[in-house]
Image (tube, rainbow, N blue to C red; front, side, top):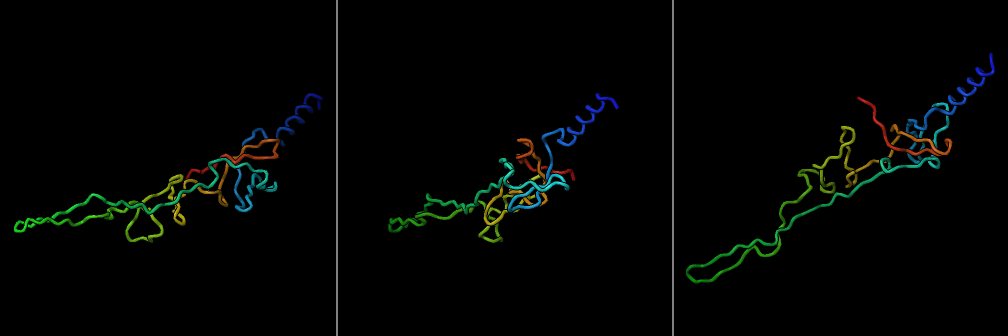
Length: 162
């Protein structure tokens, strides 16, 4: 074997060991503490070495029991014989209640509002619309290796074609 071939093989082995890309795919194996596995033969990446980006952090908004009150209703009665006028329906009256579905648990409003993720309906949980769910066991994530593998940025969830 010539020296040039030996150097080439050493360089190739070094690149194979280090990986040609800084991107990799991992699977969430624990939620608390957060752990992500990239290769079966490697120890999982632990929470301390993971940098989470906005798409993988839970975001939710409360569902409000939103009601409309009608303030301007008025109804008058006039007596033609006595000339007196009376007024009924003064005050504030509840009109349509928004964001509420009939026949469902009133503590969970807005059942007609649906959140979607990759063509699947996400549940409304404990009175909150989940805009962005937290990472869960089994989620596939796209990782960017930084600091020579000392830290990984969790860029987003990835979805496989059905």
